[in-house]
Length: 203
Image (cartoon, rainbow, N blue to C red; front, side, top):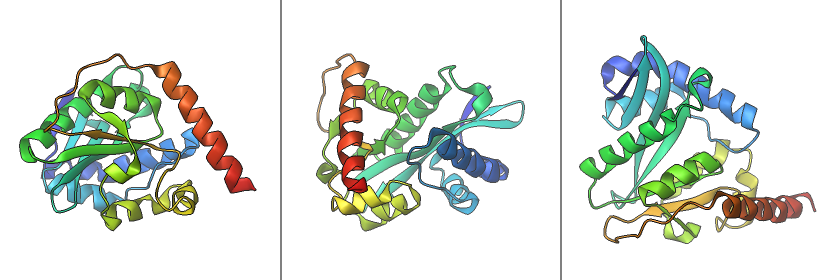
């Protein structure tokens, strides 16, 4: 298996990557925004993507997005093919795209929003910290990307202050001390947020 910084030759996998993201969203039943094959191909062409290949088959992917005129970057579309999950591949891809971000955009703050506990743990180990949405980019284009997520109504109802996703931020200008990720606490906080937000949505 190879984890590579994607190039034009990897555009042939764009459709499979898009389908894999869609299927994962349906299976998880949680919010994952759609990415079209054309959108994914654009990220590959710009040199802002990482892909994992095994026997000439796509098995994992993630890409970089630039926001706020380069003040922020985000890692999006992190996906691992079903047959390769549970092997630590997502963590390896995430580390590679993180290093690519620091190399190409050394002054930018790196952020992400996710409902997935494994991704939260990976981000935390890389130095991300949970933050309020107000500390993330205010670029409207980023938030418009959430429109294809099933929980978009929660985001709009709270005036973009919170959602079922957790916001996480890595600031290259601030040194952070490493602490163990407390998954039990994170799960409990996630459950509380889901109960509050979804309950309001039904009322």
